[in-house]
Length: 201
Image (tube, rainbow, N blue to C red; front, side):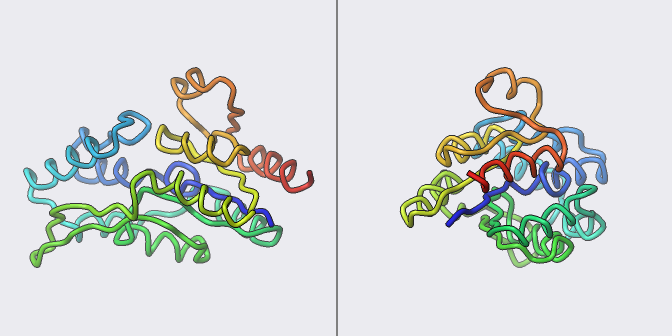
């Protein structure tokens, strides 16, 4: 059996924190895992900014409700699901992802959860597990499933390396340069070509 594991933000949908940053006019919220490889440091920074600015989960969800998948993403997922199994491995949160999963046709998603106070403030976050993407791929491999993985950020590298098959997708120049042995594609057609090569082996 073969399985495709994809990152969500930056691959299938826009970066949620960047969209929210633009909506509320706080440029510091534009930082993502493309900029900061230490995920806990990044999330503590984000939650602190939300607290300082009195922003709550509902404020972010309003922005997410108006977001759409990246151009071509819906058709890409449809084609993939006709050919093989697909799972989205993301560091996003259930509370963010629901409306976007609906727009993508409800692919399976493994992600994290927020800790929400009664007033709607985000007080903390709970990871499904540490290095969740890498660990999920390792678990699938233990079931004798061959994996192809693709993502765009620092937090996708261990997933791709663990899979042993995969590529970067629209990754920034620094990651392309540092991970020069990994193929990087910039279109869904290019990504589908890499996946087809994997499936046809």
